[in-house]
Length: 509
Image (cartoon, rainbow, N blue to C red; front, side, top):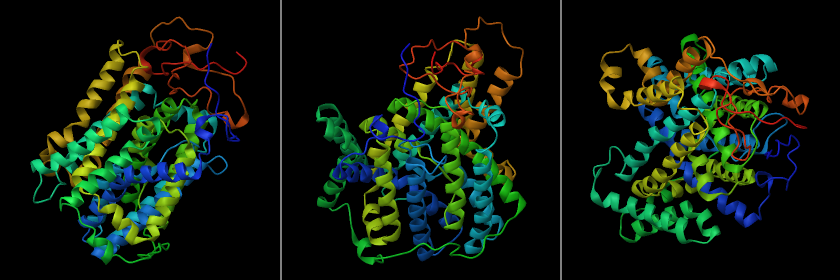
């Protein structure tokens, strides 16, 4: 039976494309492309939160630089790995959108301004430490919680992420929400031209050109806008040359129970996101993903989030946008993400460089982002393809979760006028509602009810009892592992999606 090579704890280079160290020029080019792909998503959170809290322009610029700086460190930890921390996969770490509404609610409740940031950072640090500690739980406890996230849940969450992000890309393509020219056909011309250029490169370009299609699309679209007078680099001249992020820049964090509770719930949702992204990237790069890999990814999330609270930033999660980029470019090396992390650290220290990247016009960025976000949704759909959707319970989990994810954007008045402010701050997010619904429905329909009779193979219920090493102990029988494309195992081994739809062949089988 065909198998995917198991995760190498030592990370030996050359055994798998993920561990390949590319020549320095390619590392730099591909890494910079990742930075451009995630840049808008990275800076939008501090911009929204800082604006809602009434921060000054200087304070807002500092938040953006702190975010980029911490993103770089977090991405290096996730991709390069430190001991048993970090998935050692091409995963970019970025600030989670799920935390935006709760952080604004926490900040406004604290009176706004920099004083509100101190309450937010206290909650962020606590939630990060809790997430980091959770990922070190004993194998049995970790697997019990991980069992809440089988492919029917993770696939649904990644699909929801893509569907929720696509409107973000389309709004940028229209000129950016709040722009006086929002919806102008000229904006869609830039976005459509950028998208068409990317698609042409992907279709007829050589492999190298195809792999940097997003980067070339952004550069080409920006150049066209500049030549036509619709792009400006004036802000570069106004920005400082150097800006260094220092711990607790705004003061010592404050720890209050309700903000901490909100942030813990946010981190629970980001755990689902990271779990889904880890499996999605594993499918894309052809790497075996087990429970230990997920645990390492979650440890990196927790460490990065706690570090974010110290360095004046926010909760971190594996960024789905860059998962779509890996799928498009087929560049699988994790060291590309390490290079991107270095770029982000530099950008976080050079406001002028960050201002130059920020000069990419909204419509150009939106055209490229829409393509990538669509690929994120496709990654979720691919995960769901491994689930037996002919089983009515699984179909209900997916269908109702997708419907609930659309509720905040479809009926916003429910959350703004007819819901308690604290509850609204938690639920007014398509990702939060969709992920919560998927977890609860799977728990009720697939795990709490009576089990249907099944004909079990040698590996019962999709659970493998053998382990490769002590390090992998929490991994091999992880119940949410999707079957690799090369595994050759039927997708309907376990019923109802409760225990996962796949089995992995243990070593020596």
